[in-house]
Amino acid sequence: GAGVSQSPRYKVAKRGQDVALRCDPISGHVSLFWYQQALGQGPEFLTYFQNEAQLDKSGLPSDRFFAERPEGSVSTLKIQRTQQEDSAVYLCASSLNGLGHTDTQYFGPGTRLTVL
Amino acid sequence: EDKVVQSPLSLVVHEGDTVTLNCSYEVTNFRSLLWYKQEKKAPTFLFMLTSSGIEKKSGRLSSILDKKELSSILNITATQTGDSAIYLCAVGHAGGTSYGKLTFGQGTILTVHP
Image 1 (cartoon, chains in turn red, yellow):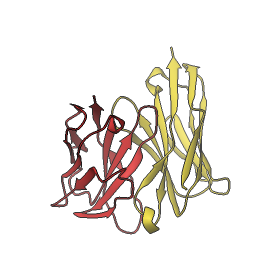
Image 2: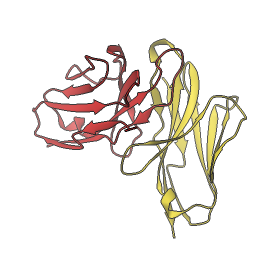
Image 3: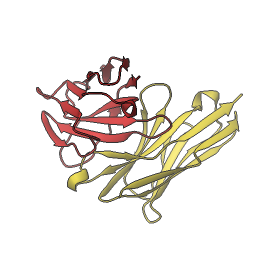
């Protein structure tokens, strides 16, 4: 089946603009994760959903960042009033089973956000 | 604070060489250690390790976990130019407030020259 897909693949925003990044997880996967990867660094956790419930948002860097997954499938990461330090690759990952243990996470290709 | 450290940060070898990449961790509620390969796209899953001392192998790649030393190694034998990538180590958390997330190291950049 299809893997995790993300759109857009590239986004250029002017400082202060709002952006919305989309993630389509693997069909049937319960858990969905967002990560931020700065240049030359490993991915850093932002937030985690189990179905439609956002169970952990401890990694969101500020209240300008908001994520949702209203029907337990597609997720959107929204960044309001973008700043230059938001420039990064935003990775989405999904895993099959959210209960009881940490399953293998499968990653999408990421959205590269550049804030000018 | 949870920490995953990889070494070396970068490595340049020639085709046919064998390489060993290292990962050490200090995390709460350890559940598993995962290795990913990242080229100019999505990180692709290589291995998940949960038990100490049991080697996992896939072709020329192998990995092993040492829970006593809080570390893991990833070996690649007979390297090829297609092995050039960033290799990411990540630790999965078993529970508590960190449940579900992966904590990543900064990655090892491997370059294999022909």
